[in-house]
Image (cartoon, rainbow, N blue to C red; front, side, top):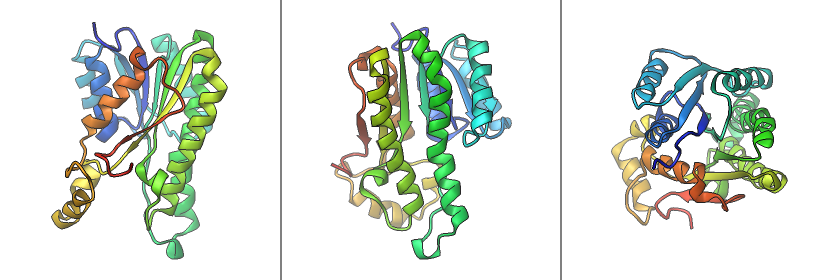
Amino acid sequence: MKLLEGKTAIITGAARGIGKSIAIKFAQQGCNVAFTDLVINDAAKATEAELNALGVKAKGYASNAANYEDTQSVVAEIVKEFGRVDILVNNAGITKDGALKRMTEDQWDAVITVNLKSVFNFTKAVQPVMWKQASGSVINMSSVVGVSGNANQCNYSASKAGIIGFTKSAAKEMGMRGIRHNAIAPGFIITEMTGVLPEDVKKSWEAQIPMRRGGTPEDVADVCVFLGSDMSSYVTGQIIHVCGGMNM
């Protein structure tokens, strides 16, 4: 029996990177997948084809997760097409790093809006569906820097810390209807974004990690499978660190 058989998930920002890994793991476990990205380009189309080839129903949707109206309409479209939403993974996110003394208002606003407001937008849009079903699992992508902070990432750290507060509050509000809210706090994960870092920078990061390696997108995706499945049916309001012990 596949862990997510017959379930339907919405995954934001899933054309590549961690989001794509989550989508593939979900599909391998029998989950139908609706994923969003800013544009459905060739890469997104390839992801869609890859998911459908795993024998599930999958479709990519162009959506600006930071826009409230856009999110409402895309979720309505997904519900019409798929019939239900069992899992929401709020994965969409950006960085615009810089020292606080030089950070512009635009840098601050862009990161807070994309990373934090998008979580509100999508959670608000799926809430009536999950409430009616009296079940659902919302998985929010936070970060170790949302817990411990990081120099030159005041905007990113604030957005990821905000996600933690949102997750715990939503878990308290919606637990009575069997709707669970949890967050994942990844550490140093090797993606396209971090893969381009100089080797000495990567080594210095890895030296701080008890497991002495960077994580993979699959490491994060495996935890998402657990949180999306009925194996975690009594887990809500939790922040699960996927960081090789970097943050304890």
